[in-house]
Amino acid sequence: MASFSFGRERGHPIICFRNVRKAFGPKVVLDGVDMELRSGETSVIIGPSGAGKSVCLKLLVGLLEPDQGEVWVDGVQVNSANENDLYALRKRIGMLFQDGALFDSMSVADNIAFPLRRHTRLGEDAIRAKVCAVLDQVGLPGVEQQMPAELSGGMRKRVSLARAIITEPQIILFDEPNSGLDPVRSDEIDALIQRMKVELGITFVIISHDIVGTFRVADHIAMLHGGTLIAQGSPSDLLRSPKAEVRRFLSRNLGLPSLPERP
Image 1 (tube, helix red, strand yellow):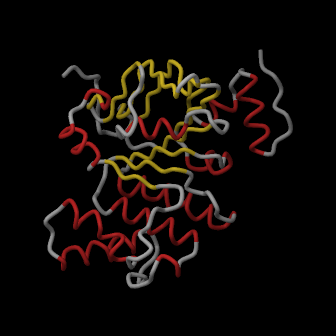
Image 2: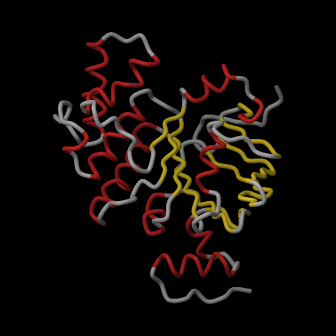
């Protein structure tokens, strides 16, 4: 299989979209998107509702196929990979859903241990040790026997992150990490994402409506609008964008006075 020049060292491309188009019936959600995300960085995909952000995450793990173009993750062309290759790729990716997707009937420990019991042959002693270790990493020691219903929204997000990192993934996809959280808890989740990136070398791909949080955590921002990628780069690159759509969106969502139009 042909491949692009990928690398797992920080700063090397690990995710690439090449001329990706996706439509649902007559509605074109992505139209010729070219996007490159780099290893060891936190990349945040932003844009108005319906811009195709969630579709990008589903394309990355093969839950959807593009109508045209190519989606590459860690050297694997996702949209032409066989089931075995997809299974192996998905084991290297952690996914955090907007609502946490915890099993309400399971304790915190059993929720976090679920992927280890499903995908590894580790014994229970080793699993318990790993569960305790990741709970320490996300700042929730001692909650192993609590049930999800007993946790706050911020704690549920942390448990979901603990479950995602317990398999030591290379990439974590995070759908709206700050959704439903108050500003204090949002700040805590942002700080945790930054710390996990540094300590574990994880590549984060986040979709978010929280633009203030985006500018706190992002190394790279990609903005979708009307099915196309209209801007990508560092946070400072986006603030300097000459495109009117980008400047209006940032001005409105960052609570700033209107950014002056640039030539």
